[in-house]
Image (tube, rainbow, N blue to C red):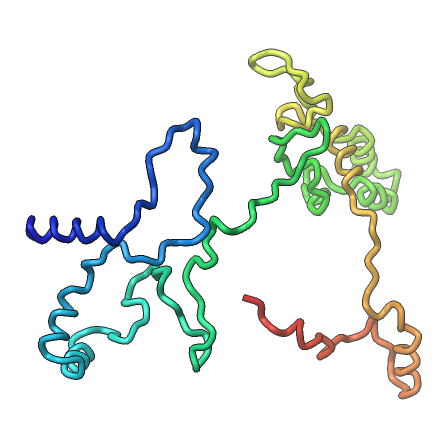
Amino acid sequence: MTLPAKKAAEQVAKKVIPVASKAVSASEAHTIAPSKTSSLESHMPWEGWFSSFVRDKIGSNTYNKIKKVILFAPDDIHGLEQAPRQVTKVPLTDDGSKTAQFRYPAPGSQPKARIPSLDKGEDPFDIAYYPRDTARRHRDPAFPNPALEEIKLALLPQDASEVKDEVEKFNEGAKSSPGNKGRFATGPSDFDSSGLRATMSANHEALNASLDANEPDHLPMPTWWNNQEEAVAWYKERNLPVPMGQTGFATVPREGRIARW
């Protein structure tokens, strides 16, 4: 673009484009409310001047014929732009009665994010998952399920020397992760009495206590539990073996099969 053409475009832009922003200081930045609607006016009013010039000279019919031959996807509603423009209305129905626009409603008009409040004394920076990870509690081969291991040892011959050694190890408990008692390289720390706030101070005793407190205590029942007598009677009337549970094929409601986007 030549300098005279650029200056002319700037003059046109100043007349068409309103002042959308201003310089603000850091002290008043929190008082500036975001715009509730995006600008519907073009910030580049000079755009498309060449195509408009050619259309006026050769006519719309000839221009559209040449456009379909030269351009790739000439009827693309977004003009092959990756990010749609806010002013572009995309038809959602065949008759065009229902449309959608990019970033509409504008993000500034949406309700503010709800930040959950913390309980009194709760550490907002504590993101450790292992004190609450009950699903993988007994998957560590170095620290298996104590109740299950006790049952296994009880089924083995108690007079065997190998079994006696394993019983002693079981009674002694895990030797790993004793915790550093709150002492770090920078000195002692008392920010967490349980020691679970940092992995170096964590120990098995406090970990098990935390897992016991977070262990799920609900007992979910299957869907056939309330009508199990009717299901058993159906099989017995037909002299069929009663299966475990009850199949639920094709019982999903229609709303449950519709994909949500």
